[in-house]
Image (cartoon, rainbow, N blue to C red; front, side, top):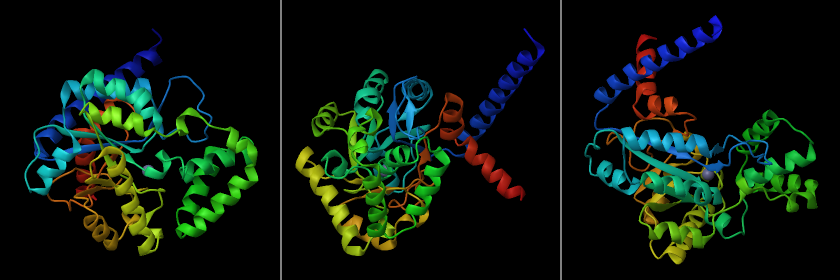
Length: 330
Ligand SMILES: [Zn+2]
């Protein structure tokens, strides 16, 4: 074996040992707290997706590796159970983890559900109900497809820049700009219908619900950033989402995930509206441990890890601990 390969192997082994050690310490120090992972879509391995930004759609082989790791080493629990425990101010069971998906992609059913069933892992899917109703496509996916057509080979960075800019705009203005981009793309956009951007059907949702393994939460109706909406629009988005889930599934959702999920993407008024609509916990995309110390309406989640090692470092709290140690040393 060439020496460079041998060194790479040794470095990997050393890194793995360090992760293991830090993870063990983290699990001890952060006992009673949990980790919630936020996935979006999934994609088949080695098949072109047809979108510029593939990062929202994890390859299924990677997702399977993550599930295998979690099933072997962690206590994966339904998010409703985790939320109820935290709302009661109690500690979570040792090694508590919850799996969530945002938006409601068909790939959650086609690719993810068989894997979750294989390992017996519960999960929550947060639904943007207008996406499932086929009345409101996910606007950021429209931007992705339109840029791909308008700029012919546009780089992912230009999409990222465009999305950052769009996310700062008041919702009506953002929608207008997206509409213009889509218009410029013309009929080609309508013909584009990549598998990764397709929505779940309500039948698929009901089938998953019937197994008792998968639960569903709200994620608004048209996926706006709520802080960029008027109060009336926020109320409409939250209530329509709740009503559509109740109509289709026969139960009112109690779990909610904020679109985009950053700290500035909702307001105190949003939290009041959510409580009034019957939601009892809400989940951001701000990284952190889920613990009784957090407000139950602003619970943290971790973005999707991309390997078993990253999963271990994330859910064990190892990353968290290193951040705290670094912060303490600064
Ligand atoms: Zn979303």
